[in-house]
Image: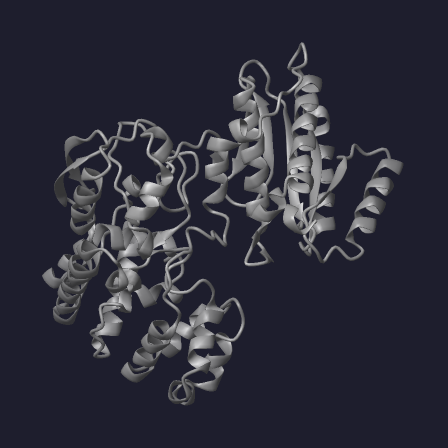
Length: 483
């Protein structure tokens, strides 16, 4: 899994007030770490920006209208129309937006030939049913294996890139950002000319393409399958038309039988049109950048401000060997506990009163660790997985061992199992690393704390190396005015 090490935001690099970008309706991207938000084609017509609402939506409809005409005319993979459709459905990854699933780089996969062949084949089946809605290609993501949110984002970015560039031309002119004239060439042969800022943190100094925040979602189409289930439940006529067995697939928060959904959706024109209506009925609301429910944004802001707003001096050991790094990590953990329990940083663990995902807690700890290592000019590099996972501390020169900090929420049903897995890892690594198990109590702890301590004691009784378990009170604290 890719790692996050030195995040740099667009606003920090170009010394722009973040509020100015928010006012302009622009995502403040991190230039060397992908933001896991995605362009949702279903949001284009709702954008506040005319380049997208009018230009992008029209471009999108015309583009896929052409694809549909080609698929209708195509008879086999050797047919000229089939090959033309293949070219139009080939969407190379566009890393310039800094969106997607990448980690230390902002590079993704784009749609390879195998994915493109599958899109053409399934698209042909759908068009042959008599369906001509351009959104059929978005809907396919719900049942085609491997066709995920990053592919939808790449698809949308490729199709409306010209409109995005016109949006950038207008917005960048108001930001006084240095720009260069560039010719952008995509792997599918398309090319554009634009005047854009340069991203100095990526190989080759590629351009930066800003994206309107009101066309971004955590996941395109629906945050989870239950949104579509809820939308269907509210439509009596649609609910009656949908086969009861298929409706059952949408009731949970995950859809496990994609094949069954695929068979139903492709069974007739009426079935696929019902399927499209279900997709269109789901909530289409952009990602809440300010509230940041998934914890994708807030930690990036903290890495830029924490060291100065909440200064903390680390007592640096004479030697940064394994013991020295361990000592530094323990000081950072204690400062993290202080910020969460005594400085109301516990608020960063919640959105609308509900705990954010566990990855948000991990990112919060990474932001604290990164900020204080940087502020104290330490030769230690904290790294965090781009998904859920530990934060690693490594000395940058001459030291291969590491100190690992696992961050878990009390509501995690696998809290005890996670600690057990870490013990097993130590049996393999022996003294190659050291670790700490941080448990943030955000509720639903139950008997897990006792079970964790019992597991630790049992392992130590058998002579195993164990990680210290540190419990931190992550419950929401009253404001000073209410104390």
